[in-house]
Each structure stands twice: as C-alpha cells, then as structure tokens.
Length: 240
Ligand code: SF4
Ligand code: SF4
Image 1 (cartoon, rainbow, N blue to C red):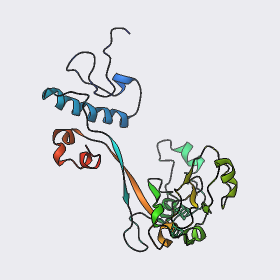
Image 2: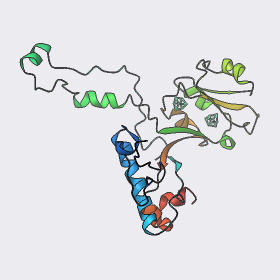
Image 3: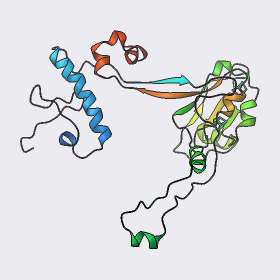
Image 4: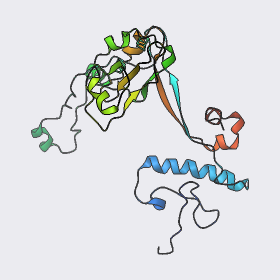
C-alpha cells in the first residue's frame, strides 16, 4: 500500500534488498521492548547478510527450566508468600496538590512496607515441576500445601476428576496438571495451577525430590550466538 517497503517479521529485512528496520516504522505502534527485539533480530540478519548466509536459517528459540534449590530448605528466590491484600499507595493531601502543581503526588512506601509488598509476589517465573518416577506416595506434599491444590487420586474423565480434588477445580479455563501413573499404585498426581501460590512447601517437604521448583528461562539467540554457535550457551541448550 502507498508503495511503502514491506518488512519481513523474522529477518527485519524490507522488500528493498539490504535495508533492515523494525519498531513503529515497520509494524505500527508497539512498545520499546518490541523495538529492541526487532533491533536484535535485525543485527542477526545483518551479520548473515554480510556473510552471504541464508537470513531465514536462524538458531531456534527455546525455554529452559533450572532448579532453584540451594539447600534443604533454601531457594534462590524468596518463597515466603504473604497473602496480605494490596496496600494503597499514600498520596499527598489534595489541598497541597492544588497549591503546588509540580510536586510528586505518590509518596511511595517505606522500606518495611516495600518488603511486605514484595512478599506478595507469586513468583510466576518459578514453576512446580513433578518427576513421577520419584514419588513414593507419602502424601507429605498434599498435607502441607496451604491452598489444597494437590491431590493423589485415581485417574478419570476430566469433568468428573475435577470434582474429586482436595479443592474442587471450578475454573474450566485452567487446565489441570495430571501426572502419569505413580510407580506404586498407578494413581495420578493432580495439581490445580489456578490455586498454587508458588510457596515451595511441597518441594521442601518432599523426601524424594519428586516436586522441585524450577525457573523458566526464555532462550533468545543474539547476533553473537549466531556468529559463533560453538561458543553459544543458547545454541547448546536449544540443541542446535
Ligand atoms: S508451591 Fe505451594 S501452593 Fe503450590 S502446590 Fe506446592 S505447596 Fe501448594
Ligand atoms: S511429598 Fe513427594 S514423595 Fe510424597 S507424595 Fe508428594 S511428591 Fe510424592
């Protein structure tokens, strides 16, 4: 349309050979994060273009899970979840704000309040990961879970299974985690992710390490990974 150049969303090269661009000028209004990502993709393409390599032949993206266990009861993240309600930000009095319009309206939290706010974090980048073959069905994780989102039970049809859990899973939009058959009885471990607060207590209590807390890392190759895949950790982890 209007004879504007068209940009390839993978390589960031436009319909005019050897010209690369991204960001708002390429795809319309997005945010700065997208613009930076386009810059990284363009850098890979420019390197390949200069080396007469195929621009579409790129290292794969991936996700890696890394255990966060640092000791018997220690994790690399703060798992001391606090279910306190969200704290309201204190503001400068309205009369003062009308008298002086260039003052900062939000007063901020004290150090103690900020620490309490941080503990409300659900650590969504840390996942509970279950290894079926390690489970001895001792029920310790079921007993300690503060929100009853774990159940060991007979497998069954999802609709009926949802009614048999420690806390019935009523949000049908949230898939259940259902393990393979457990080694001793063939029953299954079921987890309702909708309830989990990522407190790590199941993994701390588990005597065999069947539950673990693992951090998900997104693996995005950059130009230096493409330039030297032999030395690239991203390439190694992604199996390229
Ligand atoms: S991380 Fe906490 S809330 Fe989630 S399953 Fe384990 S014990 Fe339950
Ligand atoms: S605590 Fe560990 S071994 Fe015991 S039931 Fe839970 S996952 Fe299985």
